[in-house]
Image 1 (cartoon, rainbow, N blue to C red):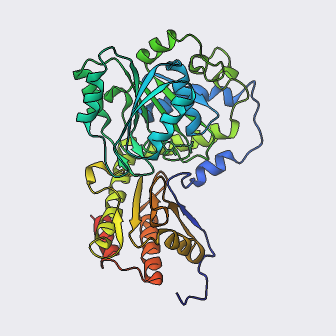
Image 2 (image 1 turned 30 degrees about the vertical axis):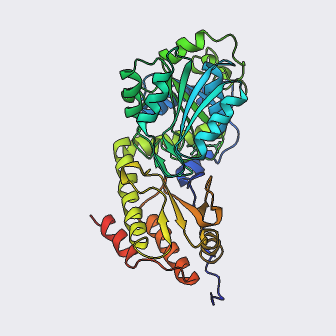
Image 3 (image 1 turned 120 degrees about the vertical axis):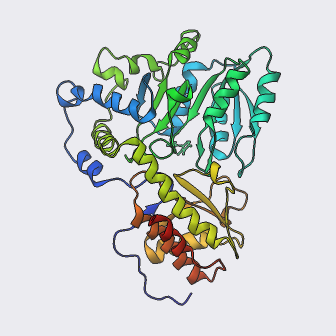
Length: 396
Ligand SMILES: *Cc1c(COP(=O)(O)O)cnc(C)c1O
């Protein structure tokens, strides 16, 4: 590394899997004085906002909004349907499932965890065995992380729904689509998901700070049997408010709501099908480059099977342990920040690319070109022709 001139001045690029890049339209919508929270525009915009949110999640059912990050919505959702002592099943394909399971333990649930490691999607046969063994139906919910952002594994939620139906198991199907909403296809009602949790700082392109819990009638029926639910987490008044302040149990996240309005306008004017298609096409370009680099040398993709790769995030590994060094190079020398490895044993080898939300072809080429430059500077051995391979995908 002989480079002496830093090339990091200019607009930097945070290419991590959340928070994601914020569109100018979102930033501009938020740049305003505080609005009246008792009367006027903010109150009037709520019905369309909640219905446009439901459209992104593919549901006609209820949505409760929380001033919270993703961890907050994990606890909110659990608090409405899982009483202390009840059991949840958590099939884990990475760190985030463990995190949700730990939160369930924190509210007094018993957790049955099936660990598929950090590079494998769910094995539905093993989940079936666990559900079949639960003859008394003590498992009240399955905590299903759609895209585990740590591993970049995409799990098959419709297949899990079918399994529950085939086994006539009444557990709620609870999905975490925090990383996938607005990136990978997710259709709550069509897929038979009972509770969906998500947050705003990934595919929804808004700064971290609001989270959403969508729930259907089956989940509401379970809610109705709960001995108690914390007043703050209770989803009922939030989803069916008589007064504006009930949406948030207090002061509204005023500026986030304006940002969210702008982001929903972007998503729906592009069209959700097109949003998914764009993420898929861009992800394929990233995979083509990474697969080419991986043909020889040190780079590996964490997920071998394309069918189980998310279109929003890609977890990678440098077998020589220089993932942290590469991130450090691209950040300090090029102004490109890549994501840290999460939940992996070889922390310094692993890193992740975020490609969720407000992302286009030139941004993908910037990520890949930055990686190529960094690996050149560090002398990391790799296959040749990665950028050409990505360009060929983008050009089709
Ligand atoms: C980001 C993420 C979370 C955590 O969200 P926070 O806003 O950081 O609390 C949980 N689950 C998944 C799948 C995520 O991608």
